[in-house]
Amino acid sequence: MIAINIHELTKDYFVGFWRKRRVRALDQLSLTVNEGEIFGFLGPNGAGKTTTLKLLMRLIYPTSGHAEILGKPFDDVAMHAHIGYLPENPYFYDYLTAEEFLAYSGRLFGLSSTRVKSKIDELLQVVDLKDARRLQLRKFSKGMLQRAGIAQALINDPEIIFLDEPMSGLDPIGRREIRDLILGLKREGKTVFFSTHILPDVETLCDRVAIIYKGKLLGCGSLTELLVGDSSAIEMVVSQFNYELQTALRLIATDQNVAGNMLRLTLPDQAALFNALDAVRAHGGQVVHVHPLKESFEDYFVKLFANESISKAP
Amino acid sequence: MNKILAIAQNTFKEAIRDKILYSLILFALLMIGSSLILGMISINIETKVTVDVGLSSMSVIGAVIAVFIGINLVHKEVDKRTLYSILAKPVRRTEFILGKFFGLAFTLFVNLVIMAIGLVLVLAYVKGQAYSRGQVTEIHASLFVAVFLIFLQLLLITGIALVFSSFSTPTLSAMFTLALYFIGQFNADIKHFGVEAGNVAVRMITSGLYYLLPNFGNFNVIAGVSHGKPIAAALVVYDVAYSIVYLAILLSAAAMIFSQRNLK
Ligand SMILES: Nc1ncnc2c1ncn2[C@@H]1O[C@H](COP(=O)(O)OP(=O)(O)O)[C@@H](O)[C@H]1O
Ligand SMILES: [Mg+2]
Image (tube, rainbow over all chains, first blue to last red):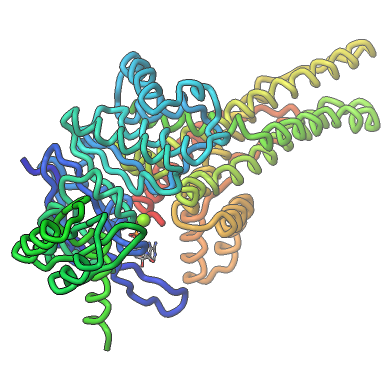
């Protein structure tokens, strides 16, 4: 089942006071998100992630294109009862307490007051804000606001949760908590769509990712699909090596360096690996580890954007 | 409906948790109380002065509250982005506008009730003083009708402020709303001017403006009431009908403008 289907979504902003200039923040974005998956929406600052989410939440209106969420048009009011949304750098009514804010959120979903009450108890526990229940939001730290924001996004037990940079500005513990929370949502069978500009978030969490840059989709798929590159290369580390072994290996490896008492080799393919292992057996030495070299996601990311800027250059 | 109520309650909650509101009410109560001093200077006309000063304070302070909360009603939520999490929920923008309006309307209602109680207490005191001197003064029911007409006027101001707030900055909204408030006080004169000018074109323009711009002339009964004159029932009926129609137009306009808007 398809949870979110975005079709050629485009958004132009008009900037400047006098002579308005058109800025295309989102350019014909098309992608689909499957039900039950954690989908990472990845791109550097200014890529158009927030714009996409604001369009889906009908906070701004598209210049062209359309989108369906749960099979309904994105601007279907009733459909919005089944989704949750955490805005970027959330800011809420600072005169309300956490509890009041969640109650208000629940009422806007048309939930009964008993249902809202039990849900508040449950969610304050989940996001670890039980002690801050009666604290005004103005006294909340950034991490606490983020968690209150997640709680309001979950108050209606949504089928899809949209999170805009849920981990930005959080310390490592906070990031960890949110990561676990997202994984918990997946276990409950929910679909999570979250935007981020931070690679490790995506690498450790997502089933699939979309990469967006300057409003354009650069790639979409599972991480293994996106991480092509020279996966045949192998890294091998050897210890207790002597001069003869080092000389022998120099002929086989494409790259070799010594760090402390370790010799680190890059081998171009399987054949080279077997030759290297023969050399180790012949000259004595100990294999510490062997592992296939994969292009890191970061390398991929950097390369992608580099290509993109080169092809755009006049 | 429940959603509009929830938004209205939240708007009211915000207003009553704001300290500025209390200072304004306190100020109004002080003004009402100060009429006692004025009353003492002008012997025998205490009641008149107290009613006049009291109702005028309620009208002016009420207008100040309506304008300064009204111009911020929508703009502040857009600016601080508190609206993002609200409008992403199954809430229509029209529901948001109506919730905001009713929230401020209720805030103004509560304020007027507090100020009216203050005024009645002061009047009761004045009455007691007069009685001890062997004079009899009365608190007329028309006092409360006057307060009701002030309330209607404040609702219209709120509606106007809301229209501007739905697309403009607070500063511009305040300027426009205050301008319309003052023009509205003299709107009837515009029509008179047209009639007296005799020129058909001028008359058409002035009567057009007369119907387009708010007309608060028919809501000002303070002078009459302070002189103990009754308020004609027909006037009240006319004012209620006028308020309903004018508010319906204002709120539709605010909802329509706001529904089109891309939030910042
Ligand atoms: N309200 C706006 N008016 C004009 N330009 C905007 C507005 N919002 C965003 N932009 C521009 O659109 C682009 C995408 O922004 P955004 O969606 O916020 O990116 P991201 O969330 O990926 O960091 C940026 O170039 C940004 O400057
Ligand atoms: Mg963003």
